Amino acid sequence: MGATTNIDDSDLDWAQSLANKTGSPEAAIRLLLTICAGYPIALIYRGFIRSIPIFNVHHLFFALTGSGLCYFNYGVDTYHSLVAICTSYILMHLFYKSSTYLIATNFTFHMGYLLTGYYFTESSDYDILWTMPHCVLVLRMIGFAFDVADGQKPHDKLSKDQRECALRELPTLLELLAFSYFPASFLVGPQFPFRRYRRFINREFMQYKGSVQEGMKRLTLGLIYLGIRQMGTMMLPDDYFLTDAYANQTFLRKIFYMGLWGKFSLYKYISCWLMTEGALMCLGFTYNGDALDGKPDWYGCSNVKLLHLETGTCMQHYVQSFNVNTNLWVAQYIYKRLKFLNNRTISYGGALGFLAVWHGFHSGYYMSFLLEYIVVTAEKQIEEVYIKSVIPHMGSVVKSSWYSYLKLIALKFYNIVFMGFCLTPFIFLSYERWIQVFKFVDYYGFIWLSGWLIFYFVYQYLHTDNTKKSGHSVRKDEVFSKATDLSPTVGAARYDKNSIAVDANFSQATDLSPTFQSNKKNN
Image (cartoon, rainbow, N blue to C red; front, side, top):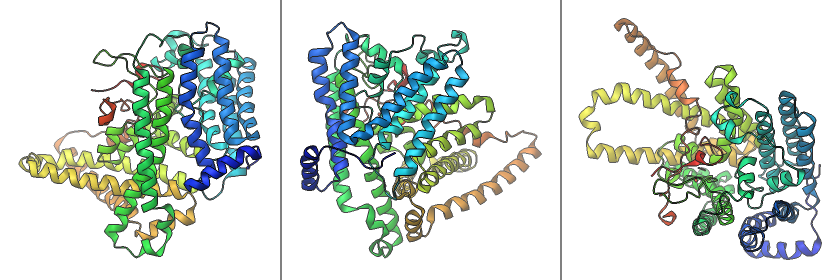
């Protein structure tokens, strides 16, 4: 499995020249150009292809344009995705009547192939190699196999989500190639089921208007976020946090800079998702039913909830609003499939563990997801203590306006600085680097969490003891069940139409129905 990308020299010259002029890596320039290519592709499709009644022409158009863009980025390494798609197609027919074998062999092959690719290509930095779109493809192929398997089950044995995605009629190889290489989505997502692609091709969305206008709004937002990200990188580059200049700052400055840098780091992903979503909207692909105002809802593939992200006051809000469709996918195909374990804590841990492994071998991924689990759990515990023990004794204070403002400021400060702490391992990846940054900030996140854990166990002991004396029972898993039911993502990933003034999704990542009604907006 090659770690290098083989691209024609003439192609390399102009791309490298553009990269040199902008001061960005060539791979990043190619990625940006590929995302932007979704817009002229949408224009060509709407103008020349959409009205053609032969569906194979549509499939061929998307398969060729998508695979061509993949080749533009990764050269002959495009063969990795072709191998994955063809293998899924073969397994689909080989184990069509054996759902368990289909799911098991398909899952094992794709995760094994991806992890092998990581093993041979991973460095100490975040690399834009063929493994980046391949990890998106892996989720698509795993979900596809689950949907094929669900299509063989009786209708009344399926959940609502499964019924909406189950495939009763198998696709052709050309259809599968078009679905897998669908332009504007194969590089960075979002995830969507094959049923959505098939309904789009069947022209079920053609009658609805306004998709192009919404798509251009998302493009504008994406460019704004990209610009902010670039300015933020100039002010606070990643390497700055490994220098003595950062280490010698005051503690408050260090944690504030870390939080601000964390926001800028998120904007890299958000800008890509917004521009990708805009291209999908322009294609007319993202129809999600009608909004409450009766107008078509075009946010069926949103991957970020901007308003929730920007106004959030805790880590759970980041989880709810970031990378929504990936979280939707994990909820539907991992978390809910582990229901047989009858333990939400284990299921949630399994879902986060899968996400960490799916990202790669770097220790930073595992530490970030572990911190997410611990912090979200701690926030639920704090909420429990606040409701049970603070509000009853400070009712008049809690209701005052000055307290509300003070609380909002404190929570927002916590939201910013702690997000930077949790994101640090995810960005720096290798243990030697992220632990060095943690050392510069005196491991404050670990100290805070440890202190809270000790306090909470004492609180629980005293509270439980008092409850027993009063004759009331207490559920042992009361708080942990709240923090481990994927509630931050499942069911909470509803789109708000007013997510930013220009809008007239991250959010991921998890449970609106995967086809249309799954990502409805709350007004």
